[in-house]
Image 1 (cartoon, rainbow, N blue to C red):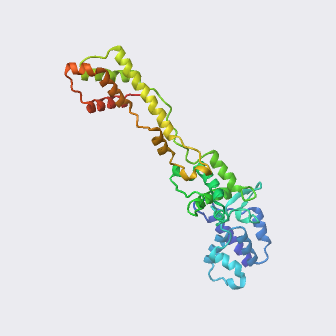
Image 2 (image 1 turned 135 degrees about the horizontal axis):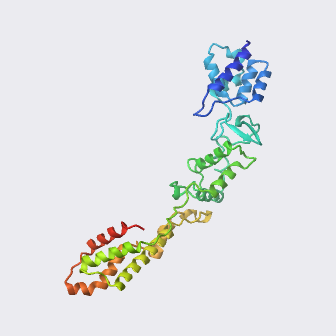
Image 3 (image 1 turned 180 degrees about the horizontal axis):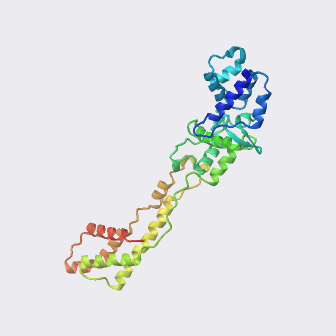
Length: 332
């Protein structure tokens, strides 16, 4: 077996046994094997292996064959590729990453031209954009659930930061590379649109409103009257307190929805984006709504004269705790 034939067999063995980060072993295509078979020298075969994106295989082969005279069989460029694993550094994928490109299965490193995203593309061109263009992208990132207070990632409106917007763009470009979508296919733009249609972090969705259990609330009100006044409530008193509690739970629910609502980011509102909730509370004078506490207040108001006549000194806080515990533990 010639040195060239032995080299090709060694490369096939390395590819078959090499597992990259838990991925399946790499299996050369028949076209790749045919190209290797046509090589006239081992140096030419080494160059083909590098072109296929399998620099790691050449590295492994050289480590397994340290006595080989690389100076006579390897070109200077081949040696650099083997020893330093030089070559295109694709964002998010290795050069030997299998992809489907234009309907054909290949490795990303074998695709000719400069179509796929390389390390550095996530910041190149973007850093030099005008602030208004950067804010347009930042607004899209926020609405896609990739940036902003909803996901805990702070930003500076109109400023492209490598460790913020650059990382987000690298994520988009990496996804595009892995999907076989390059610059000609507007890869990162397509991936961003997918995120916009399906945000990473959806705004909090409150549970649907379920009215309180009337029977459970009635039981709690009966207990309150018996503890405080030694009697059961009159029908009108029971209805008044139950309706009051039901109304306050609706108000509490609606306010919760209002406060959890997330405004859509635009370039114009980026400077104050995320501050609208506190502004709403101040502007509208919103306060916490406690249906249980309000029920106790209503009870005290409609029974005030009776308690004075009976000489009852109600402990409002203790009563509040009693009602709160009995109501909040009731099934809804």
